[in-house]
Length: 404
Image 1 (cartoon, rainbow, N blue to C red):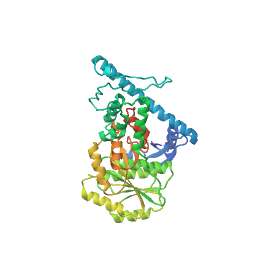
Image 2: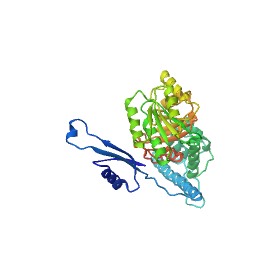
Image 3: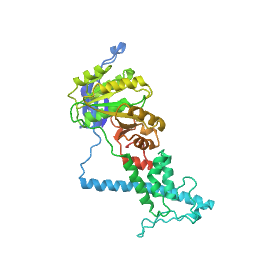
Image 4: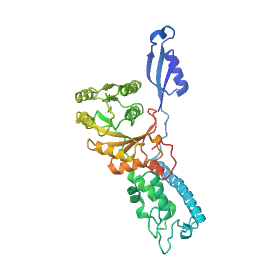
């Protein structure tokens, strides 16, 4: 979905500008007349600001049989691309060892994936069975996979759980088989992804919680925009972030663009009142104040707000930043775990080169993954978590920080 604003002297002129840039299928979301203020109104005419949108993700329907084949092909392509990367690393290690005249005499490489005999790419230990000094793993391929996951900042105990059973003296599995096994384990450990779903009864309340500066307000606006524009749902927005005037103004701007109601909530009684007011909406999005997870008073106030509407169906998303160090992420997650059940949203994927914290937090909290975000564009820079892409990135596959 692309959303743009156009300014012109008249509505007709603004609409022409929108259609010229976005095409004839553009949808007008909002028209606002801007009046000049102060002395400037004597010299310049009033203008019109038009907000228009167009869906840029139109895709053809795919038959189930065709989809399965394409999905399998995509997985194989990912594995092959990562295999090539690991092969390059293995060859680099072999060249280095040849020069130093050390490990090369103890390692036998057998590689020919195109050969009908499907020779193994494996490590053959000598009688002394000397283990690798850096990781303790006997198999050279396993060692490189271990190092790659470690560079992706996956916790060591999680890495060992994934690959330890593959590291055996007599392992003669081809590189692709080992890599596919690890890849599959990563995807399974990331678990079933659970994005936002409409409730069985109206309204369903969706709370966004988390520490200051993680992008809760923008994330809420992205999801609200998608539900309103793409799924044609009836929504409302509430804000209990009364600490920051800018946050309220930001939500009001999004609400105006989407032509949807927005209210500011100060007390649990306000929460009940406004939910009742918009009880015919499909979804009510609630933005909460960002604060330290160690602030007991603010956590208590947040819990009271959620409890005030406990008779309605609710869903809580804990929004965390992918750039925060993992020990702090885990501390934050454990704190909110004491308040209510939640799903995980990771923001700022474009600001980090590693995504190990996504796998780590998923496993350590046993909470479901839902979305990731990678920029400020509303509603574009957000997507449902894709375990295959995360697994590829963890194993060294290239990523631009989006599409997780």
